[in-house]
Image (cartoon, rainbow, N blue to C red; front, side, top):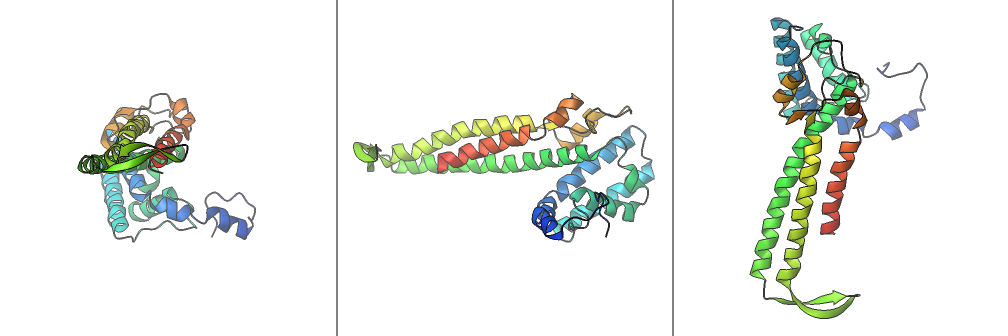
Length: 251
């Protein structure tokens, strides 16, 4: 099967398998985020008069169907599709006809990649922050219970001072509270809606970027369309750095 991004020459099959082995599995984790982004974008297109009521309804029904299939693990991203965006688009065209292509008005692949990763990041950071708070509470409870249990304090790999289990355990909790601030800062950076940037220079249509942002639950729009694209990798790096600090403190 000819792939969407095929350039007219044949790749080495072993190289292709090696480099793309995990692509389908990784993109499968973005299915619902891609659908959420498409639902918001379709609603915005209807809001500004690009999509007719019947087109919007057909798209909404098809997108909701994907969410139901995804929950049953019945919607997959195949290697032939190459990515989640093509899988969703092919399904929309099959179910909603021309509206499945019209939904791409005022939106590029860059928009889709960015909004999927931002939504995924918001979801994961919420979950990690909640677990971090639970761990801090458990450590403080443990420290309080064992406040007077003696243990040696080490320096230069030798026993040096009398300490306590409580002091040792609470040190982890305080470290993680600092890490939570790093996590919160990364969340704040990530919590910007990129939709409307297109390939980095916006679109020649009077779209409502705030409308899309509000529907997706972002705290704000990332306004400068050039910076939207330049921030790719920067925000993900901030998230990874915050997570790495948690791992270091717990190691």
